[in-house]
Image (cartoon, rainbow, N blue to C red; front, side, top):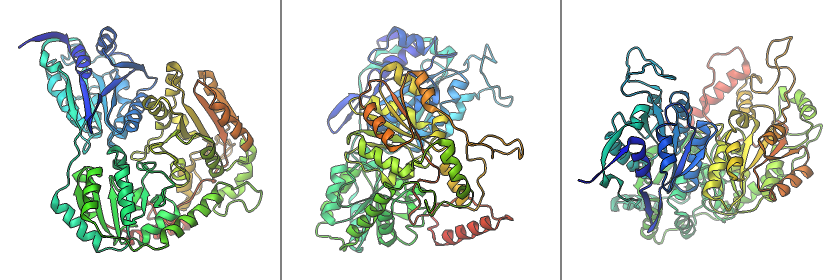
Length: 640
């Protein structure tokens, strides 16, 4: 057997260079590059290997380990999981910073390869700098925290273990049914240790992502079920996009006249203008999709995980039959569904052929629901601030403080109106990214996706701090398109460090920042369930009450981003917004548009319900009422 003597790190880099993916006859490199922040534990190990012989791997310098890993997730998501990035971190806090990103990847079934450095396998310098000592188990390190948030976890304690670890890693990273974060912990001493690796370990490896065919029995069961129903509703999930099954999905819906709704991951899988597209469904859904969902006699979920937001905490499908098409046996089995375990494209095509002759019984319901929603959408896009009678939903604390916010933020701008204007102004092929706060709800309801695969939401984990990094990752995946990060002030403050990386690399991204001086989404949740505003607005601490109920904070985000080198804009009027959007298109450097918007000017629930834990015992009658309302909804919802 021919061998080549390399360090563990050198062998890892050489192996990563030889990985390819083939899907529908198209072959591409699987690992585009490596995000890294060099530090104690990886700079002289993987760092040495990448500096001396990186091969085709591109090395990118991150600014925060969570941020760079989020960028890697966004890259893989925008590439429909056919190409990924690896992430290398230092020991201890550098590794721990990536745990949140690992959870984000796994919750969304997005492949990302994490390579956190680890403490010495020999234990000779113990406790080494940044090592956590567990007195009951010396084998535990920070990297064990990755176990529950990874689809595959391994620790390479000897150089020769790298081979089985990486072969298993590639298996999971290229598995469309069960992919997510893959974590390979690399002790810093082992990174530099050498071994005689077989040359065969470094041969070109092609990972074939095959389209799983449905079983005949599952198709027969599905046909029987559908033919017994008159008004089915399709749900377009993220699996449709990853399978690249949009045309098959559209053909199925059109052939049988079945309307469809979208999840956050599925939105822009097909154009919003499609005549059967009702838009977003569930807790962040619109009135059209939610209205049809309430009356549907069959739900057909294609490539969806059926999260609580999609099912309105199982209220929508309490007594409705469910059919699933999913590559994952686990997800296909949810809601006691009749299941087709298959690739989305193949499953739809085979089912369509077997269902020949069927037609739904919809008459004018689809058009009427869409017309009603379009009227509401136009209202949301044209709301203006008025001193009196502004928005009926504003209540309690905000009835008295709205004028205060207007003065403090020097704005009359309404969030929904701003969002509608941004949608109108940016190019149709632009990609938008988002993850948390009130914006995902507004976007799923209001955003018109004129072209496919331009809506990039992380809502499996709804991780604050994903937004800026995701714009960088999406732009790396599609460099010819403009990318806009839609982000609230809360998420921006949580994590925006990869803006600096975008400037360093000359990778232009655009940040559209909605500043309402608070965690507005959570303030809504709080107040909607009977609790007074508490700890969710951005206010100074009062010297009188010693609570966070003092003056409203005003932060100039444009100035801070300008200091990094971004082109920035301050927006207080619709005219300034239009000027900023148009000017930002002409820039070659990353931009930030700092928009001051009034609180409580986002969209509402549209006949949906979200099951949250409400206090069963309280002296507050509003909380008591909220708990009783929750119990009544819970009694009507599906239990499994």
